Each structure stands twice: as C-alpha cells, then as structure tokens.
Image (cartoon, rainbow, N blue to C red):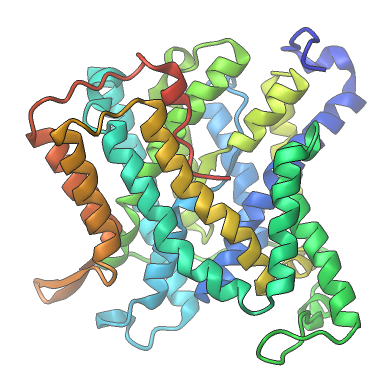
Length: 451
C-alpha cells in the first residue's frame, strides 16, 4: 500500500471511502486520547471527564485547522506531558488546597493548563518576530531531552502501584502492546495502545466472571455507573479556576509540549512532502495548538497536542487530505455526547491502566533519550554534561518541589519547573551553544512525548 501514489484530495476516492478513512484516524487517536482522563481519574483522583476530553479533542482539532489555514493534516489529542502536573496538583495540601475537594482541584489544574496554552502564543510571537532558529537556540535538545526524561521517570511509581492491583491483568495489557508494536502489520501497528486496552478489558470480563478479584479483594469490574448513564447527554463542562501554585505546576510543562509540537510539525512535513514550518508557518500552528489547549482547559478538558499516531496513519494510507482528519474530529465531537460509552470506558480496572502506563511512561523517558541521541548531543563536552546533570538532579531530586510565600500567598515550584528553569538559564549563560534548528532533520522530527 505504501507504493501507491499519494492522494491529496480524498474526494477523488468517493464519500464512503473518505468516511472510512476518517474512522481510521479516529481509532488511531482514540486509545491514547481517552487514556489521559482514565489515568487522571484512577491514579490521581481528579474527575477529568472522558466525554469532555473527546469533545475538545475534536473541537481543538477543527480550531487548529482554521488557525493553520486548513493546510496541515494533524489531529490534536490529549497530551501526556501534563500527567505529572495533574498528579502534583492532586497532592497539593497547603493554603487554599487544604481539604479542597477533587473536582475543585481539577479546576485549578485546568487553570494552570490555560496559562500553559497561552505560552504557545508567546513562542509563536517570538518565532514570527525573530525566526525559529534564533528561538530554538534557547531550547536545544540538551535542555528538552533531559526534561522529557524527567517527565517519564517521575510518573513511573504510579504505573507500578496501579499494576500491583492485579498483576496478571497488567501484564496482559503490556504484552499485547509489545506484540502489536513489534510484530503488528498495517493499522494494527498504529493502534497498539487501543488494542492493549481492548484485549485486557475482555480478559478482565472473563476473570471477573470466574470470580477473580483485585489485590484488595474488590471486584475487578463495576458496571453500576454504566447502567445509570444515558445514551445521549452533554459533556460535563466546568470553568477553570486560577491560582499561582497550580499555574507554576502546569506552565513549565508547556516547554516540553511545545517541543513536541515542533517535532510533530517537522515529522508531518517530511511525511507529506510539504514544509508546514514555512507555510502556513510554525507561528500559526503554535497558535492553533495553544488556543486549542487553552479552550479545552478553560471548560474542564486536558491539554491538547498534535498526535504522532495520526502521522503514522498518513504514512500507512498515503492519503494526505486534511479533510479526512477533520472528519475524525467530527466523530470525536459526536462521541463526546454519548455518556454510556464514557462510563463503559471509565469502568476499566486500574490494573489495565497500570500495564499500559508501564509502556507509556517508559516510552516518554526513552523518547527524551532519543531526542538527545538523534541530535548527536556531545556529552564529552563539559557544558552539555553540566546542563543535563543539573536538569536530571533537579527534576528527580526535588520530589516535593519548593514551597515559599509571596505576599501572603503560598507558592509551590515543582521539580519539573525547577529543572526547566535551571536548564534554560544554564543554556543561556554557559558559553559554547552551537545548536541550530533545521540542520538535523531526523533529530528535529523526534521530539514527541506521547505514545
């Protein structure tokens, strides 16, 4: 199929085939997109909603397409980069966060993501004014790579604790993902996370019927909420709230997320054979991604990000028409109005989430390593070694962050925020920065931090 000529106008295939191609893109993003609210719910206790997530994945994608002049075949799904931020906000217990209910903590977490999305606009303005190469000198792989490594390693303990609730189920999910990731063919290779979730869920149904329980003796599955849910209903929107501590938790993560965006734009450009960084321009795609994230979080959804999974579908199908992606976005919006499906997904045992997270969190850190390797970062150079070392120690050592008081308000800097600040400052201060964006296309294409 990869030998066929590229199709840039899917209308030539007819409407039925276009609709099927849109479904293919929806399935590619589905597993990873719904996994974010599942993890935030089951691991961190914050009620991030699946319906809201799907709705804003679709709306955000359509919004991105408008901002990028309808030229870029990209889908925006849930960002994994912010999972550590959700976990940190869920554990805040000082100042206004003392005895705060989980749903209100989620609102403050979303407020932090709103600000993170707006930082995209700042980078977009800088790119437009001074050019992408000058901006990227302050965010080279020796800074972004170790930050991405820290994101994955900080999340690792939660994967183990969830898997421990039922190791057989977790190992089934992990094994299925590995098998399809390595030996899968065609579309099956594109959606290993979705397959891992589905196969493990079927296994959970069988195990539950046979009387197998979780490690604490509770039932593996509980369908009470599924029975109560309706077939049609509005996503449960809620407005974001703002506090400096939550903003300082979430905002620095935008650095890694923006690097992911730039890598995805490079990868999509290489796949399609058009330079989207030049036309419609990186500043436009950054604005689209940032505003989509801000819009989602403002009403209780997660951060959005361009999805490498859908770039894989472009490679597989060789259909590069953005209209097909927009069909997938419409499907996602429609799914956002089906509460019963959301509750079925929400009934997934935490052990399955743990098994999937084993792969997912490890891949986040591994992609940070890949970013360093493919950009040929020289660690015999003392400058690079110092920057990476300080980022890693800050990102992993300050497990509780730093808490201080400003004007009577309690402010907390997370380990990732400290690492990002330290890395960017050291990179700016220490002499010898020779990184230039665009010289190594392969390295620039692989900055992504989703599965």
